[in-house]
Length: 173
Image 1 (tube, rainbow, N blue to C red):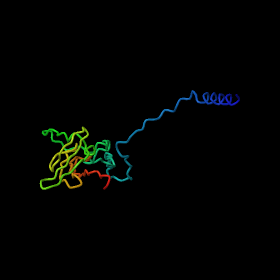
Image 2: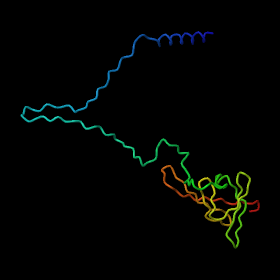
Image 3: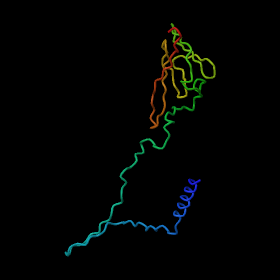
Image 4: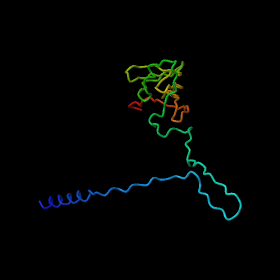
């Protein structure tokens, strides 16, 4: 009970001292000089020239060729788009969403079978477009598929990235 009385007295004292009728001091407006002050010349007959102040140049000037610092870094990769071409079913999914099922390498050109997230299987040959970033199958080896993706990075330059989709290892391998 005594603790509550002490706390209550402290809060009352704090509230009373916090209120005052004193108004805050008004700040004087800051005046800027447009010209440099003119100094008086010694007692000679030479004319005194007034010196005009040069406009203040900023110390740092942002280079517009650099990336926007306020743009999101999460949306770095924008695919190189060609609106004239419709998307294939394999271009609706990302490469990491697809699962490589089988690779057949023989006398003809190599082929690979991929299962997409829509539970459909697709056959790939070199040159087939795959993935959201307009990737193209470059090569099919006995253990992996090599895909080349072209995209625009945050600076707007076109970059090429090589991605590999590998066969999962079996239990005995």
